[in-house]
Length: 331
Image 1 (tube, rainbow, N blue to C red):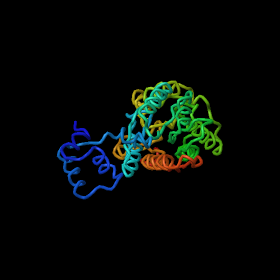
Image 2 (image 1 turned 90 degrees about the horizontal axis):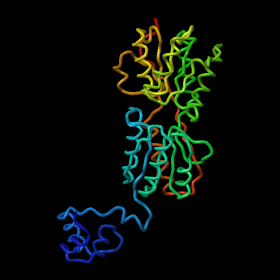
Image 3 (image 1 turned 90 degrees about the vertical axis):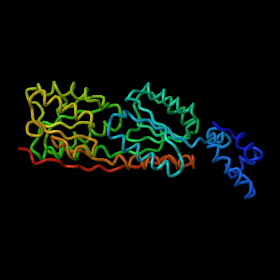
Image 4 (image 1 turned 180 degrees about the vertical axis):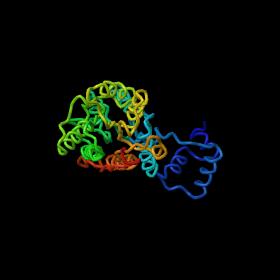
C-alpha cells in the first residue's frame, strides 16, 4: 500500500504539500497540485482516514446495532441509514445483538474502541451502563424502534399502541373474539405499548383480554412455536393470532400446519413487519406496517445533526403505522 511519503517522492514535493493538496488545508499552486494528484492516481494512494481524523476527533464512521440480520425488516432500516450517511460521506459499521444485552454491551464497547462518531441502537434490554458510558464520552446516540427507560437521547419509534389497536380491531371486525398476542420481551417499551393497544381494542369491543392468550417470546420463530402450541390446546383456543414480527409469524404458521389448521380459515394471523415477499406469500398475511426505510432515514439524519450540534435537546420522531390487508374475507 502506497504511503504519503511515496506520493511525495514521486511528485517531487514535501509531505506537507501532499497533505495540503489532499486535505485542501493550504493554498498550493496549480502546477504542484497537478503533480500531487497525478502521483496519487498512479500509486492508487488512499489516505489513512483514522489518522486524518485524529485532530478533529472524527472518523466519519457510524456504528449500528440491530437485533438480527436474518430478519428482513432490518434490511430496509439499514438501507435507509446507509443512503443517508452516504450523502454526507459517512460509512456504516453494522453488528447484530441477537436481542442479547451482553452482546449489546460488547458491541457498544467495540464501537467506542473504534472511535465511531455516533451510534444507532435497537435496544436489546438489560443494563444500560455501556450506553451511559457512550453518552458520557460525548458520542452521538439515537435509539431506533425501542428505547430504554431513564436515558434521554434522540429516538425514532413507531406508534405501537395504535398499531396493535389497528390489528386487533381488524381481527374483531373479522369475527374473532379469541385473539392471541405473541409478543417479544415485555420489558421493552415497544412491546409494553403493543400489549396496551391489544387490551384497549379488545375492551372497546366488549371482550375481556385473556392472559392465557398473551405470550412473551424473543422474536424468533422457535419462540412463537413454543408459545402457540399450548394456546391451541386450551378448551377455548384462539381463532386469530397477532405476532410480533416476521420471524414469529413463520413460527406460528409452522405450528398451524403441523396441526392441520388452515390460515385464515381456521386460525387467522396478522403480523408486525412487512415484506415485499408477502405479496406473493401463501397464505396471504395482513401486516401492521411502519416504514422501516423511513425509520432508517430519520435515525441517520438525527444522528448526523447530533454529531454536528451536540447541544441540541433530545428529540423524538414517531412514525404512524397502517394496516396492509391481504387476502379475502374469512370464510
